[in-house]
Amino acid sequence: MLALGITAPIFIVLVFGMVLRRRRWIDDSFVETGSSLVFRLALPCVLFLSISQTRFEDAFDPRMIAVGVGGTFLVWLLLEWVAGRWIQPPRDRGVVIQASFRANMGIIGLAYCVNAYGTEGLAQASIYLALVTILYNVLSVVTLNRWVDGARGLRGTVSGIVKNPLIIAIVSALPFSITQVSLPAVLIQSGAYLAQLALPLALLCTGASLSFAGLRADSWNAVFACFAKLFWVPVLIGALGVMAGLSEQLLGIVILMASAPTAAASYVMVRGVGGNATLAANIIVLTTLASAVSTSVLLVLAQLGGFL
Image (cartoon, rainbow, N blue to C red):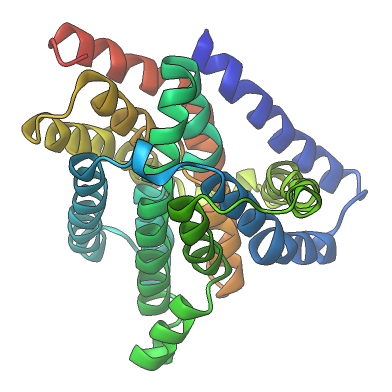
């Protein structure tokens, strides 16, 4: 019931986006402009504010970060290998790979951790979010450029990483988190207004792009990404956490963050490079709907195994 309480409102807003598009209250131009605004301004504000106001040394655990970064990189390598053999057409491989490893940590993952471990869990999860999100964005740019826009080459890939607004926001926020330099209250409040745009606007745009016809056409790719995101990835990263000897709370944070559904930012990035945005949107909806059940099952299994 706790997982449903977190997931259901998100899914309802996605449905609102789909309904508004069908009633012609919003159109493709709105979706394109809104997605760009989320990616370039609103999501960077969310990340900057959440990280800059977290005390770095109180929340940083090197083993947990190593599990998150190392596990994500290992998952990405495995997905590149598997998708290269099982996902068709090739242009959709980057969409599936990104959707399979990129979790919605900033919204659903953090909400899971707060409900499970309170403010201490929030601080630890925020630092985890900051460093793993950098890797998420780097790997997303590399994967999408390779499979969707391969003409960019190495220079284009590096340029995409350096200029990525999400990476810029995270890197800019880390010095404030480490030094605990206080930002002016007016800046924090102004940034909070912009940050509040991120979730509803991203979900509305994602819902407006949902196509059930497209879901049928891409059913294998969507199901593959859904299973990988909600089962394979959290189990693998959780197993690495057990081998690393993480405490129960840190292991729980790692599992909860990894088991979150596919991030809405994945849709924004796919649309930005001209990829299969419909497939990206459908995967987000499927994983969001199924994550309430899958996360609960994973936590029960971890408890039965004596890990939590």
